[in-house]
Amino acid sequence: MSTIRVDNFGPSAGGTTYSARGIAKAWVNFNGTGTIAARDSENVSSLTDNGNGDFTITFSSGMSAADYSANADHNGNGSLNNDWMAHSMFSSAHSTTVAPTTSAYRFCTFHPANKVNQDCTYNTSSAHGDLA
Image 1 (cartoon, rainbow, N blue to C red):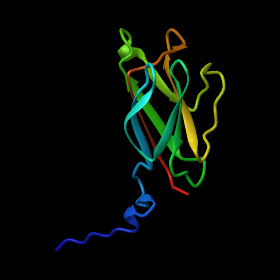
Image 2: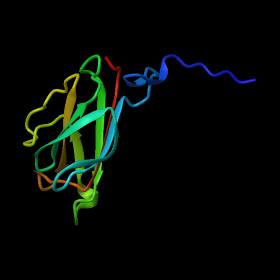
Image 3: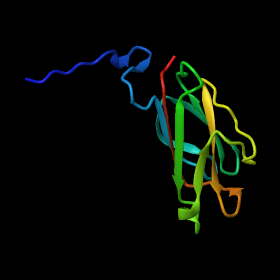
Image 4: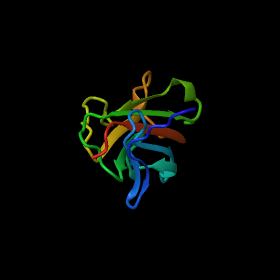
């Protein structure tokens, strides 16, 4: 006999509740070239294009504190696909950190050798932490 134990997980009137630890509380897959647009997402209300390779992800339901973990990845910017890196929470100039808030975080797609941001076709990002 197997036992399944679940605390507070499943759809609710206001959306989906995620209280199980370790589950991403927000994620997005989006096109970062031209007019940016989400291909699919969960708990992401909007994407903001702050300039070349510089994006802000805003949550539908906020986090309980700004110390959550956010990460990002990307691919598809032309001839330099394998050399690009995503940095969470950096400004477009990569000289100052943009602190996350309970409602949003920022990341850039950046080429370390050329030290420039560039839009990429495929971008993914997720956030792990506790919802408010």
